[in-house]
Length: 404
Image (cartoon, rainbow, N blue to C red):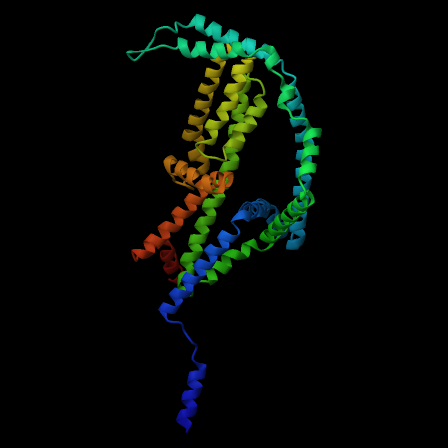
């Protein structure tokens, strides 16, 4: 009788443990559920990333008020968001009038005169260069035909065919058509308002509880695996932080350098061209090339304000200057600023941009490089574990030294 009671108590005190097969099945089900959730929220992925990005940008400000000034975390978050709203308000108050004035100046340009100047530049180039026979490396190039075609196309643009007002739609008529055709305008406005409020609320929660995500992920693993998982998460955070901080520095440096160089060349709207070059830095390798196009257009249309060259030659100088800036960036700035954060070949980054931009649009193009770098770090960890090797041997050596 006593033996039966002891065995019953033993069975009750034993903890039920899943077998490896059940655990693997549960893990696969969890992964499938995560993939399904990602598929369901794919339409809101941009807003989620935007909310997380805002929270990430404000996290240093929140830490300053919370840890340095010893304010409550919720109060620190409120102050950080108020400062962000003030900064956005100041930026809008200065930026919108500037953009409006730039548009007015663009509309007020005497376009027939501009085309006449470009036509004269091409005629001057055709006179200065022997376009009929240009020899390069033993090959004879006939540049007369392309220049002649460009010249004829420009001459075909008559003054009466250039009407900037026709390019700008009648906003009143457009608004009437929109309001007369659309029956769900208020519904769309309401949906947009809800999405905006949801994004702000998500950003607030990311900012308040985002630091707890790492502990939650670590707790999902057994205790013996937690040191490695902590080290992996730490390296992922370092990769992301290094990339993000490096991109901000590159945007600032390239924007300033481009503004100075284009100002020295006498290009019109050098400040705007510098801003475009800085913003295009968010797309590695491809962005700087795209930023050269507005500079070429500005040089071809307006030329230089002080250099004694025709517009075509100024455009060539702008391309040369852009190449020099890009090479200087690749040789000096990128290795110094980025360090070893990414260690990715440019071809891999370009392929990643092509693949992710086709699925996620501009969001995929912007975050292709850090996502590939994070995937590389995770893949390294998994391969090491598959090969039954320590991914971070220095971690265990430090632990042994501490124990000794």
